[in-house]
Image (tube, rainbow, N blue to C red; front, top):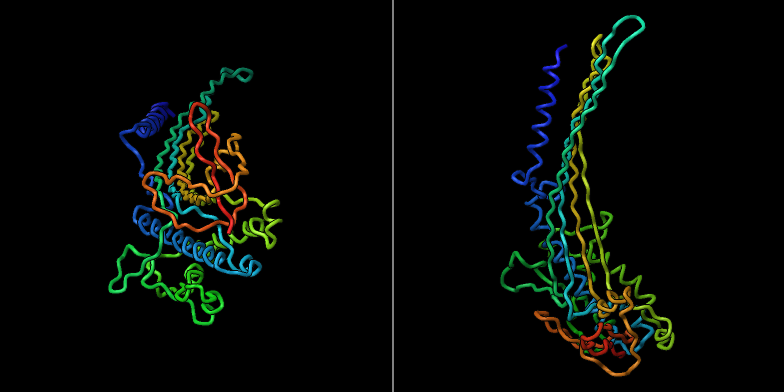
Length: 353
């Protein structure tokens, strides 16, 4: 067998590999598990799931402070101390990794006599790996509210109608304190009104809508945040500060082609060509509590406990929407320490009822 076909095969593989190793040819990250056509609907689903949770959390918080019986309030109205002065964050990361490689084992055998032979071994290899990534970040105001137009349906909105709690439930929770028109945000979060949904629900474990799943996580933190005894709460409390959820989907595929020849001249002739692609889609959601800035500063020792009593107004970030003036059940107070010569901000305080 002549060496010419081998040289041709190696040359073709070399050209294929080097042609990929250029920024003049790139791979669209949308070709992974999340296609370009799916992105708008996915973003709407994330937006609507989060705003549904915001509404349910906000209503539970209002009912908690409206309930005179603290034991009933603690048992019936779990909520997360989300800051309505802060934005939450949604990030969508799409990534494609392509790899192509060529290698071979070429053992040229030359026999002189029965006792002597000579072998030359060649093991060339060449590989090319490319990564193409798209990363989008979206701010979502944590004081967003659901809107249902009465006369027409805007394709942007999440629900065609916002249901009202039934009369019996409304009577049990309102206690005549101005909540005669409570909305059934809990039912919306659980997916109890599919006829009103204008988006595709994101299901956790294939069963629970994302809004209801986040609420179930809120209940877990609630049990160590608020106590029936205010004295116990003040002294033994941990403060929920931030929730981060990351979901990643990964798809991989590959192909390996190998040819082997044994002859009197070639004790082993085994050229090999392989290629693979790995496509990843990652979604991250961050919800910021009242003490999110303290949580970010705590690892560097910049979160200071402040014992001074009184309410401190927290500055609103530029462009942030105004927040409702509801009290918080958080007993602790704190502030972020800034290195000199910067002037430290006023203490971060959340008053009790």
